[in-house]
Image 1 (cartoon, one colour):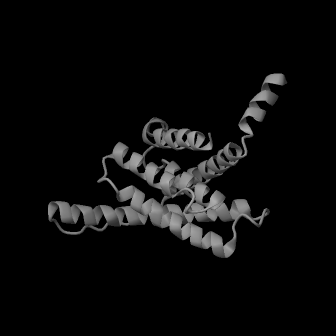
Image 2 (cartoon, rainbow, N blue to C red):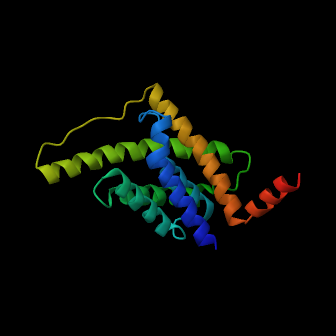
Image 3 (cartoon, rainbow, N blue to C red):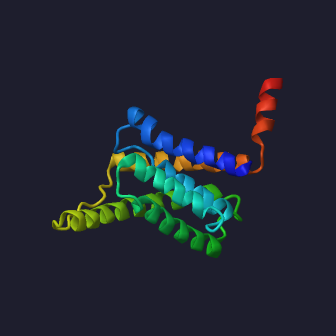
Length: 181
């Protein structure tokens, strides 16, 4: 049952990323919900346990955005592997008082790395597919990018909370408490 709940969570997160956010936010401020999901999964239980879900969410994003298949899963797997190595050294979940701060820093740094790597990967793909010159367009850190980072951090906190509740099966208890009061 937990795999079905995770399938629903991954599908909803990617669906919101691809469809609903574009109508509420400008593309420059749209948070990367899939990256927040991947980081939450890796910090929650580790890289090996959720590798399939990381790849699945990347393929769903590639199918929805029209990128060449395999680009986003490659970036997500590399970032998830880096976060897992960092988690094994720093044990992020052990420090309760600094957990939210460390999760926020990891989300912001991962978003920056993901954006830089996606620009580089897109440039390389265009070069080899169209046989044109490599282009260089850096990530612009302006107010929109800061808002994108803030939205990604907030969505990462929410996704981590939902993931934690799904894994402990606390959602039925939450709904029963709301119905009884």
